[in-house]
Every structure is written in structure tokens, then in C-alpha cells.
Image 1 (cartoon, rainbow, N blue to C red):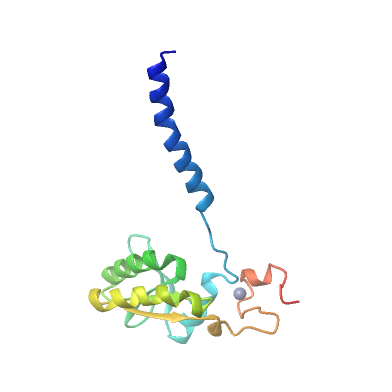
Image 2 (cartoon, rainbow, N blue to C red):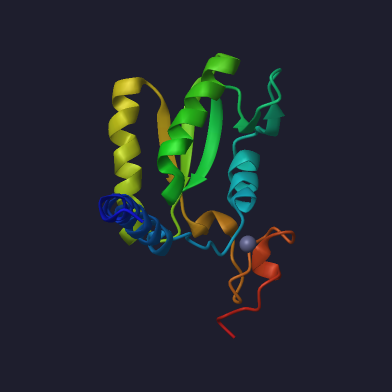
Length: 157
Ligand SMILES: [Zn+2]
């Protein structure tokens, strides 16, 4: 093979491989102890909302109350949560709202604060819930028997 061509090929491929490898190794998917729906059920019931309200375009709202179209998300999906809440507000004519799930208030409050800043500019509401809403028993299991906390063996034992 032509030496120059070989060099070009090496130069082109090397950064692509390095990039792919870096990308692969830095992917981190956080694992959550309870299902999102457990928080959603507790909050929506307390606010007399309709769970999984279906819009005419088949998109589903986590909880629709008399005043708000509410989207629930774990802290790591804070940005997607805003987009979904805004869309559901637009679809229903209700005020968009994000309920952010914080499993650890100390480390995750920073994400709530990001949304809070934007909520004042873009006219939507935001609040957060913690594990307090789940009514956990001594084994760390929540009120929702269908939650994954019943499927995993308790770490506390
Ligand atoms: Zn649970």
C-alpha cells in the first residue's frame, strides 16, 4: 500500500477509535431504588390528579391535576423533564410543572436549582419530592407493592 495513503488512514482512524472508547467507558446509568411510578402515584393521589392522562396525540402525562400538567423525573433527567412538562402544558392548556425526584437531597439539589432558575423565566412550576413521600417501612420498602424495591433483596438486612 502507498505509504502516504496508509498514514492518512491511520490519522483518520485513530481519533475516531479513541473517541468511541472514551464515550463507551464514561457512560454512567444511575440505578434507582424505587420506580418513578411509585413517587408519581403518591404525589398524584395527594393532589387529586389523573395518572397517565392520554393526549390526543397518544403522548401521556404523568399526572394531570385541575391546574397543572405534571411531569415526574429523576434528577439525572432534569432537562428532559422541562421539555416534556412544557409540551404537556401546551397540549392541555394547564400550567406545566416538573416534579423532580431527589433520592439524595444533599447531592441532587443542584439539579432542582437549575430547573428553578428556568421556571422563573419560562413560566412553569417546579417542586421536588424525596423518599419521604414513599412511606418506607423498616426494610426500606415503599407503599407500592409493584415497585422494584420488592424485587431486589433488601440491602438493609
Ligand atoms: Zn419502592
